[in-house]
Image 1: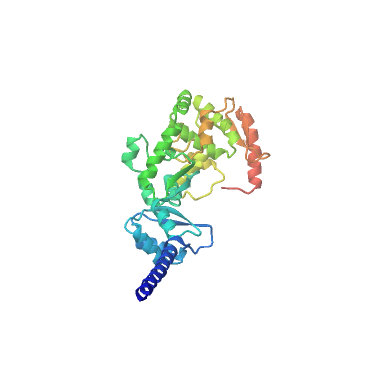
Image 2: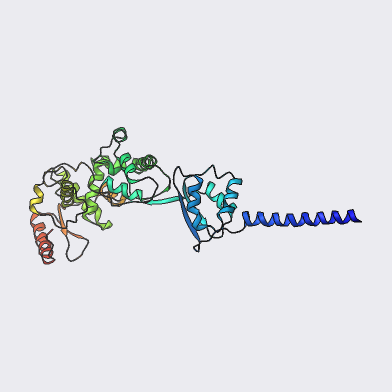
Length: 347
């Protein structure tokens, strides 16, 4: 009887121990360990980070770091930290948290447009992925890369087609550049290359004219018409005489690309710059800004008409009045000049 009581006691103690162990396992592995109020939090783990850096990033988000570290050690994550952007959901347990950090690197949406220079583009991209602006700019201007792919620093901005792309956050500068070259080659498909050839332009020249078109009008539906004006001037051996190129030339000369210039003066037309299309007949050596796809396609599919001039329409803001003759254009221009003088715009 005594031995039987001992056996029963041992069994009861074993059950109690098993209960405590099960509770311990459940609490440490399968119970919620998040303490943030939002439905989800994003954690960025930089390249080269160790487990301590991960712990420091997670500390404000978790109830119990000790239990998380135990599970991380058991699952082999401590020595296998992976950089990236990770999405943590409210109510996750330690097992789910570690699994998310092991395999859940989430892509980010990278968006860019309207950049005037490679410097601006580098800064914009650096806001969205891990690579910093200096590394990005260095990769954009890399002479070996530009030479290999038949670009120059002046026209390299045209390689970056503005759109929305998905990247992993820890994408390097070189990986970003490589992907953008791939997207550029995909964009310049057989159809677009044939259209460029048909109108007698290289893709880089299309990009330069498209940038002018975009600067001239924000109205997508008007862009093919504006492009038609510049193509008419080109075909007839005229200078492009585009005000936005003069503005760009002024900014480049002064080194101040943040300045706002609303009015081009006659003295500006004498500025000696390859971007000054009032002084030089050729197409600018590179885009004065990053053209949208709509502007690029507007050049490739420009409207066939007999207009050679246009000026802002003060009765229909955002649009322009087009003219076939200089006399008609001068009448439209006088109306615009009177309006801009009334606004007190001198520069």
